[in-house]
Image (cartoon, rainbow, N blue to C red; front, side, top):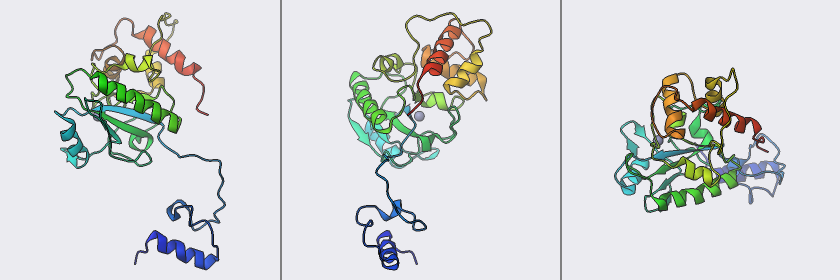
Length: 255
Ligand SMILES: [Zn+2]
């Protein structure tokens, strides 16, 4: 027979004759195999990055229903949904795993759902993103990056982490606007020529792109940084990638 956590906690207390701790620490947070000696030097262990999506549905109400039930591929969810009027909904606690990324990879991370906060933007995939929606997104990004110490450059799109399968958010998403507010990796004002021997594939991999499908990776890079979906290298790509690579190399490690 299964016991409730509170019953387990009381039993443990009786067995050990310890009359503290359970009142202040949820029993589920403690391992009964160990002697609980809490340290104050800790914080909430949360996400390492943030993945942005567009709903590709006609309304936030329709998206809410899908994110609380399922789509054609099965049950789906996200931590947040932002309506095109800027209204912010939360569907899954920050500390829990939402089902928004699916099969995806970014750098060495292959379980994106465990590693990320997912934010859905109410957008049909063809329309521009509204000012009110982006304003709410910027407030939310400030909040989440601050609370979880997420490096501010680690805000990426679903299409970036799943290049062969996904193309959201669309080329209309204002990545440059986010960068001007301090979020996301973005090229600096003046770009130096890439040095001789520069390998754009190595730079793409360093940024985080999965290269198992190289044309799809180039298409995802262009969608994010160039505003088009061409899957072949373009003039200017090397300078841009060299700049992004150098920014990452120069970035301080996460404390
Ligand atoms: Zn998506």
